Image (cartoon, rainbow, N blue to C red; front, top):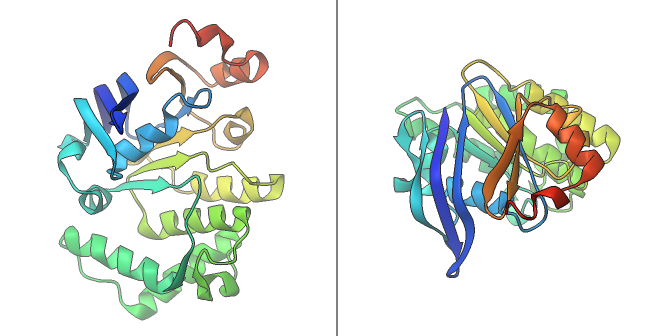
Length: 248
């Protein structure tokens, strides 16, 4: 589903991603782990089209479509979703209005009919109940006044409403206590399916206790330096990343 080949990314002229190659097939969840500064968040931003992240070499395709040639909103319409490590607060923008507008923009880009207000409200209530999102949270401006855990819960809530095909979770576990981590992970797992795929970026094994990956990759020095099964995450938790310093 996602195919990245020899990707190089710079920020302000500084090379961050240096020849990264990765494939994530449909139906699978892959985890990327690595030390601070390895390029994990840079990878997610480059794939989703954040301004300032310049791809200088390489390719990235989603279901055969060249992602790098598309603006961010077109990448989203193709089914790409990024759950932010630090979700922004946007005062004055009602959460439900924002999400319905985003959903209908994507549906329009795909040639689908807009979802009506009653149908959207029914869908939003169903999703909110599963994730423990309260009516008060849904009525507030987007993320305003939320705790870190509530913001992450709202990210997964948005992801469930938009129903993307490929999901990137950028350190979704940061700032979550055990209860919030469990609820968020259950919401993520509910979105797994044979026609979808997921890239989970994390520092810690604990998230992978809840979201079981098919493959684990180590990112160091801007490229994948090791890959393995779920047990690789346990090894990293026990021994750290020191053995990859030379490989980076």
